[in-house]
Length: 258
Ligand code: COA
Image (cartoon, rainbow, N blue to C red):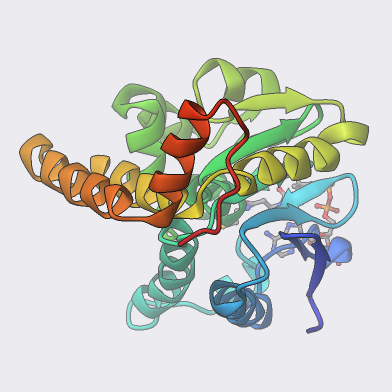
């Protein structure tokens, strides 16, 4: 891969988007690599959690590559958006938790990429925004939908209609990020969180992701059915037997993730 590096730290995979000279902007080649890497991590049984970050200390991802984007027109724009959406859907629907370590600018497609992750941690210097309106377009990689679901309609309207950038503290205040850390500790904190989730029973983790994702997509009664179904799957797992036995025997559970 040219624009992405993959490092494994035990059961945690660290995926780094690496085009620092262009602030890690997502050109087509990078998107293709991102898709490949997530597909291969889905199949990799040695990996139980994924951290996604950007190379350098300035940017997570500064958006879709504006040079490539500028060639879009009425006929090709839809395909451009759909390709990014396909990959971000893959990330959101990953059965393995994906934690965004937002280490700088997360703008446009970069903010949308972070939004597709399950948890977002940010460095103090991170800046978030959907500045597409400045280019005469709207967010096309899921921003109008995921940002609205996460922070609410009024705040999403304000961010998308003004294109304003907000600080990490403001992103924390509006619920766009879960935690804010010093740049120097961000990656370690993200790996620590990934390890913590990895230590739980993965049947439960996978089913929790599935059910929580459904909350943003379905009416309540349908979501509750998905919760019931996911809960039953967990009750039939070895992890459930181990978790409950360990509690009753006053010992630590040893999950086998089955
Ligand atoms: N697409 C393509 N190239 C990008 C890019 C993007 N989204 N964002 C930054 N770059 C490139 C710049 O063109 C520049 O390349 P160059 O050195 O070959 O000229 C390089 O990355 C560094 O960016 P620069 O603008 O010089 O850094 P800065 O510190 O002055 O400003 C930003 C940083 C993030 C404020 C600014 O780069 C920016 O506004 N980027 C676009 C953000 C955006 O609109 N994203 C949504 C796209 S849909």
